[in-house]
Length: 152
Image (cartoon, rainbow, N blue to C red; front, side, top):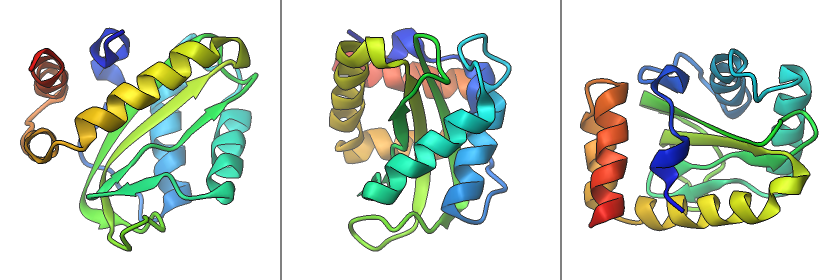
């Protein structure tokens, strides 16, 4: 199971305008709304923010992985956003977040959801991977970076 199998360049925002966690989730979710996988964008956003209220998905090292299992998603979907200035995500390390992967899955996709979350978390622990994502010039480069580090 590879993260890169689920990545689509049209769901990437390489210069997030959002200034806070809620705006960040909304901005990336709005880009995902063009996907046939998002059945209800507002419910998806609400469910992600509800999950976020249980504990921050800002995992440290300038990374957040907001996510939710929700009826508002058909199957599985993932989007990516990068903030040049950083967003306060109440991250575990207290630092602002620059890299955000937003994930959603319908409840029937629990195994896939957990496996992708685990794989993505493992990749994001690698400092070189995070640095490459910060420097990526476009969505193709982001996807190629993920593929490169998955194969490493």
